[in-house]
Image 1 (cartoon, rainbow, N blue to C red):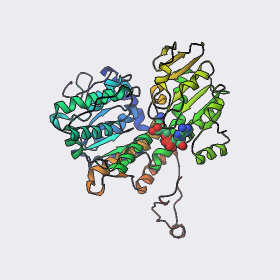
Image 2: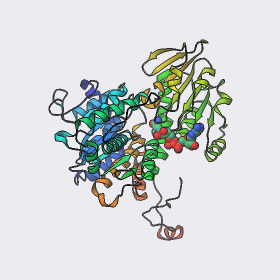
Image 3: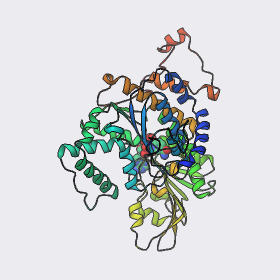
Image 4: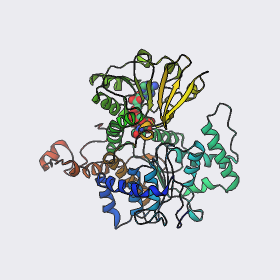
Length: 480
Ligand code: NAI
């Protein structure tokens, strides 16, 4: 704590560099800045306490400062141990008007290269507002913050936190330990917290899946807005964002020539489509794996062969998992790969590559080439290069998606937060999506910056296709 601002970041003196990067990002985030300007006077988030768990990047800094400009009091952690940009974290703490000696910004608990213990400590900090206050709103990415609250409430109701079993991963032990300490210390802390939260807005596919599961079980404790499935989020950030950051991550990590290489993209959803497009743009020979016949057929229409991992495991140079699923690249696969094959994941969780199995291979040797780049030498002498320990490598090895695309995502996030805070009666404990008017608004806010001139419907045309001149222009079932 310095000058009343709490924080846990790598190095506050990085704030100057962070502030310059935020300044440039603001210019590249026209939609988010337009929302900031539109609501700055009304301050619809005045009095709101926002707990955020989302990659602490330069772009996220612009989101945080937008929420603050709209009146919110914010606390923030990253949603991945490797994704923080330390200069952005420092700049948010120092704030636009503070100094390193006298910060006046927003509490941030995030640094690049957290341990899992530290990660969950940071996540818990976002809920601890001064004077025992709790958040009104959560911004989540992947659902870890929401999960912590839900687990906390369940164990408070039961009065006991279960012991982890021997088969549980280390992370389960860490979360259970945290919740056990919390149960011992505070009186029904998460139950009180959950009762006061007006809602969560969730950023990504995997987090949204968790929310729908809770809603289906009838155990979702507060309203949720699925930001991921705004068209201006998943059809842009997931696809075009990764098209930028996948190559950035591969280059910064390995600098290997991508042209000519055989690259396997596992999963051909939104992220897979962007990944395949980017690698093909570099001249790589791209093949795709899929379980869904529709996505498989889409890949073939783009001229991308659809294969099974087993078919190409000995020939391919680069493997990228984008499925949001588990057990995609297994140790048995890596044992058969070419020498120095690169194995990378951009799905949200580290479940896609069998890292535990890899570490358990008798005689395997792990060498750190540099942070977040590891060579694993099998006893037969061949190596695989694993990026970011199997975690999101576009954020671990690079800096994630570029500002312009995140402006779309975060304009949706900001509108979702305003909806949840200002219209508490309109949102039940279900998973909601933003109305299409707002989706179209977010897109509209970005058109000038890319010099796009929209054609306006005539009244006759609007009647002919059955829409309003001002939109929405498509029915909800339209898939873009
Ligand atoms: P999606 O659902 O559109 O695509 C995933 C695809 O993987 C689906 O088509 C599915 O059929 C396929 N799939 C599932 N299991 C498979 C298997 N065993 N083998 C082959 N294919 C399989 O989801 P989306 O939006 O593309 O997201 C994918 C993941 O990326 C999620 O974990 C999401 O949270 C994450 N994400 C990561 C970002 C990043 O910056 N790295 C940005 C946005 C999303």
